Image (spheres, rainbow, N blue to C red):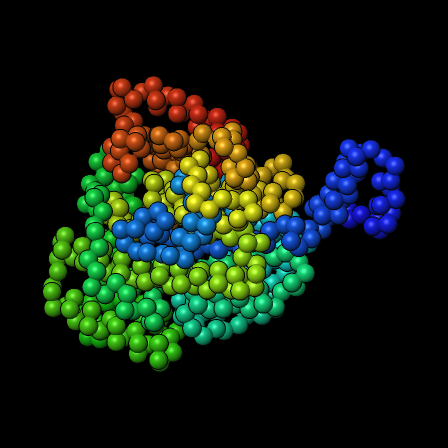
Length: 530
Ligand code: SGN
Ligand code: CA
């Protein structure tokens, strides 16, 4: 509770005491006045700006990888703060990741095990706890949890996946239309909310973009980007999935499953390119204004004509698809980068930049052609990892690089910790604050993963596993019973399943024990219920 003492009373109370006692009493009073046991006063706790994109890969974020794109604004957050070099998700799919972040608990605990279940909004989440302590809470953009948001003073969320153009938003009161490109619109709405907020209170705002989700529709204003680029093809593009039956059975191959019309925008007027999702793409385009549609067609008509003239087949067709995919995906990333720059500039102009913990992450990583794939879901590196950078100069030194194994269960306890709020006992993540404060803090040596969405789109088998600094052990289960073991130092591309290899048996046995231990700690032993 806030102290009701007047300054005079405080002065009186410390008269005639020793210096040490005075200091103790003053510190106590300071804690009472400015501590967070009651309402968090502004300036004593950070604002929190939690920016998240959807399906943004580390490969297309230049703080991690600059082969394909420069992302100066995203990099700025990490350069002036921290880049987490080993940041992972716990279940590589959208709604589950969001629920994990809100609750700080693995999917089996928060109940959101896949994209089809509905989030139980009655449970404790970090926005609720922050709001109870005086934060003003806002949420703009993708939500995807089916139940309406709880714990926010204000929200404007996309309906399901939302649309790239002229998307509708659900607000606390209504469903409203918007005009324009969704990444710009979400940023405009976020700045509007910041502008109109109660400036006496700290804020926590979730800016959750639709981009860079399938079907990677760029902003027409960015069509000039990546026009004539030839992108490096990943080493594992033509993977044959030897000794990895679960990897062989997915449906997320660029060659096989990526749709020429829907994913790659090759809607020819003659109707000769007949694909499974052609009509789905036509209905997306109907949502554009005539001006947007005209700009769209101006861009893609020559691409379509060129494609038809080439008559590609086999590997050549597959490689064409990869290049086409990369081009539009990167344009979506470029728009995110520009818009994150706008938000940073706004905070800077307002004098709030250094008072704000800025977090940028994605709901998971993504395949940019590695193993021949797009999408995510697997516990392999590209989709197990997620980008994570933070900036808060009062606690984080510029150019910090952290290599500890962190996971999206850690975000909620980090935010609560920074706000001076007690972290509930049943939160499974750890506050990252101790990584900022200490040179060598005690930290987890392995992370736990569990993916459930099978059978479903892309047909990635159910699996769980453990990843340490060096090894990864995965068990695919349900309609398959297959173990995989990777040595990430000798085989970073995860092409050699060592599980059956004689000399690796001691490692496998040890990892299985560690995995069981983690399942006990996280209380995830019963798979029969799912
Ligand atoms: C949609 C996509 C899938 C994607 C899921 C889940 N298909 O169903 O490719 O894996 O979302 O993505 S689409 O034809 O609708 O684009 S998630 O990020 O929301 O979990
Ligand atoms: Ca996603």
